[in-house]
Length: 195
Image (tube, rainbow, N blue to C red):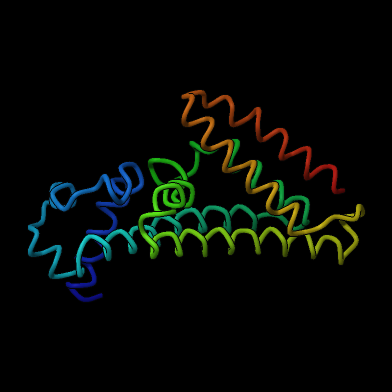
């Protein structure tokens, strides 16, 4: 890795929490220089501006989430186990190395919906990839006979995702982390009912 690549990675890693907590609009160039200890010239020497940093940070934060989910799902050999891995991860959210500040998809989607088309597109793409991964698991479960009840894979994937994202928002907004477990029991039941 070149020195420039290392510097870019450093900037991304140092500002990942900043953007995830304060959002795009709330993060200033001064915040970025303070978080990194670098000058504005150094930031602009590595990125075309705040937009480029924000987009790279979104990718970085999403890759952390995807890595956690991929790793936990891979530990299971049945479709039920793979789907229940989502329940385990989000029920025990604090034990995993999720980005500080909550779900980057949720945070970005809410903020960028009407203000930043590129970030909105990145959040949309991440949501659609997540939906597809859950849909694929459900389709495999139906094909191999593990899932015995007829179900619309897209509808089930969207319902699971919406419940998880709603849980993150409710637990964070109310400051009641115990709501994670309460709400994830509903996701667990949805999954159990498929088998």
